[in-house]
Image 1 (spheres, rainbow, N blue to C red):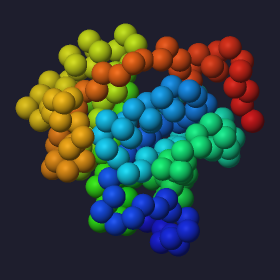
Image 2 (image 1 turned 90 degrees about the vertical axis):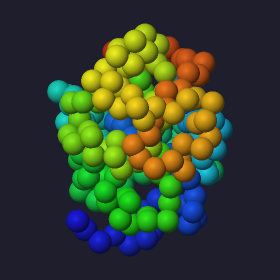
Image 3 (image 1 turned 90 degrees about the horizontal axis):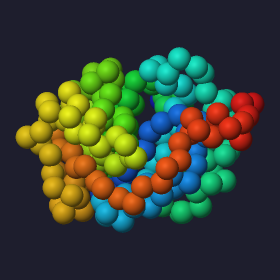
Length: 205
């Protein structure tokens, strides 16, 4: 694992609660901003880091260039609590489990919460070392249109059912020892990166 200077890493003050919102962001869109704002408020987070991945091993097609995705995401979100980061590329990690391990090693005084959509929970058992992810950090699962049934009936949800936290207790999720997860129902936006790509509104560069 490379030793990175501090200026190449995202930042949060010691003791802060930090949401980790990972994905291809190919492209980032208003739905990502919507989820971020609700998560910051409902989970009482001090910061949110958008972890723009170099690529997604579960997707067959390569995304747009990392530079293009980063630039677009930074134009889209202007909240000072939100940092758009390419730290996975800088660390050389591809799997979420490795990224989390690296971040926890470098930021032992931060309290992380992994943020993901309900569609991701539905396929979470296909992620590399998914059980170790759940054992490392609390997780907030955000409702997505049409995905609730598949998410709550998924292999991961059934396996972790004894560690589910009621949404009414979401504000304390960052302080719970992992494994802990919360399914959060929020007003939903019917928008997706795949739809934007299909309409040609997001040309690859």
